[in-house]
Image (cartoon, rainbow, N blue to C red; front, side, top):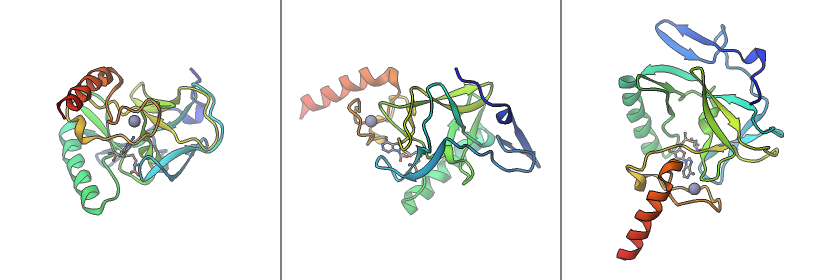
Length: 192
Ligand SMILES: C[S@@+](CC[C@H](N)C(=O)[O-])C[C@H]1O[C@@H](n2cnc3c(N)ncnc32)[C@H](O)[C@@H]1O
Ligand SMILES: [Zn+2]
């Protein structure tokens, strides 16, 4: 694995009782030179390679506020309601562990714009409590940066996938559940 550079070392900043992950001591996000944002053919806005990204590079950290599960559930509901009413935005809560989540609903967290793909070119890795996106292969300048959202099979119908890849199964589910979903879809078709 390519290692992170020294200026990307672990940072978290307490503001009052709030804990922001990845910001520097002045509350600013780091610069992530490998990425840029643009309109996406998958959904609304997406994250794109600003230059060639070599395989195994940790190229952007998912920044945000560390929140307990209970609080993040409430925030997730609020974000969902806002997105539904305005037809803009989305839910930007990243599942960390059994106790805490990362609320990435901040303009300075551009990693929040990464869309899902059934044939992703990146994956999200937990690196000692930090979430980093890592290139799964060499990525060309201009390619959209995608990862597998890893949604459980439950409620699959609520998450149609528009990744457009040859591997697309039509819904956003984690890798382990693709086989089961294929079976369900086959049964649904047979009933028609
Ligand atoms: C964290 S946001 C990703 C950024 C989003 N494109 C935006 O502009 O805010 C997650 C949302 O993006 C949409 N999305 C991401 N990947 C998708 C895909 N493969 N197919 C359809 N919608 C997708 C879904 O609405 C999902 O709830
Ligand atoms: Zn897909």
